[in-house]
Length: 349
Image 1: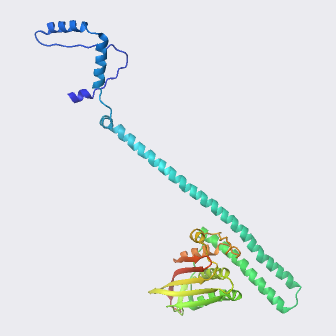
Image 2 (image 1 turned 90 degrees about the vertical axis):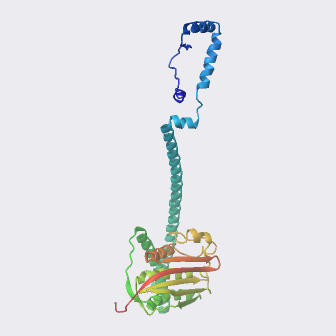
Image 3 (image 1 turned 135 degrees about the vertical axis):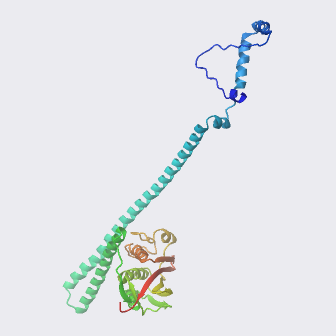
């Protein structure tokens, strides 16, 4: 009963005159009531009102978190859940804003890189085209067969360089659209390597660069089912970069190593090593394989390039189920390591 009385709350809704009454029981209740009434009549009414007010304050229970949970459990639980959801919502909004800011910065950087690429591409395409037109004009007025052959060789080199730029642009577009597919064919391993080496050795000789090919635990007399054209594209690109960024008199190595054979699958580790200008750590970690980018510094800025080759090579390697690793130091050279699996087949297939 006492507990129930403590939970009672008073809530006046209009001014009322509060009085005090006493009820007596027993045989002498009338006499006792008369005596008490006479005593009350002699008391100060203000003191009586003050005493009743203070007694009411003392009777009012103290409001604590425990009392709130006890008296309004569902309301308090609802407020707590609402607060948690508000905090989670704020955290999600902050995280989303940060992600969107990063995406916006990436898009802006990609647009800047793309703009710089097209500016370089326009210049790079104009240079061989001017060479082709210039050599053609000079050849029209030339009768010396030796000079004409030399002019035609220069026209051919410029044309091949221009064709390479166009092919890189088309390949990157196919990769970005997901339309690049492998077309396997059967080819002897040694023949494939020789075709790659023959495409590079003349460029290396012109710069007096020593070009070495090494085989480790490898037998390239076997035939493999691969997309030979794309394999050539990968390693011609890596070796061409090695020639481009290696000063005259440097050294380039192509090391082919068979690390394991599982059934008809040969695991190959192929390294392209050079003593060239190297790559800075920042560019190596953040932009090396990003399309349309090319490092700009005192060491590499003087070398021409579209900024597409490495991105395309990496995409082709991954399309073949392999991976590529890079180690480089400025002024010390670069090592590209490619891991690929080749399917060995019978020569009669």
